[in-house]
Image (cartoon, rainbow, N blue to C red):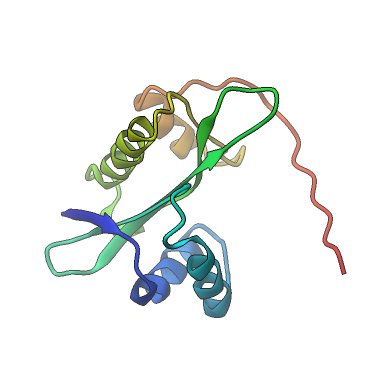
Length: 143
């Protein structure tokens, strides 16, 4: 398995993998988002490729500056192909983001995980992540 930076040709694979977690997103949206993030030093965008060159996972970490908290990196998303789980791919992707975080001089990585994703919670705990709070998420779509 190889971990490498995400590139625009990976867009289809990112959409397909995201759908496995129930996130149906348009190809054009992913492409537009990637175009905004690629080359931005505050984003770590990585894929895992199997020996056949197929993308079997992706992770997105980004620098999250807040007024009241130390600088941190937040995991925006992590997906591993359902056919390839429990093979160390997710752990390798997370380790790569953690190395990137340290290279940025940042010491904190945080993430959010939907309440019903109990297997994911166990995975993150196994990597040393601790639950720090429970919260509600609010959203407003502007016209």
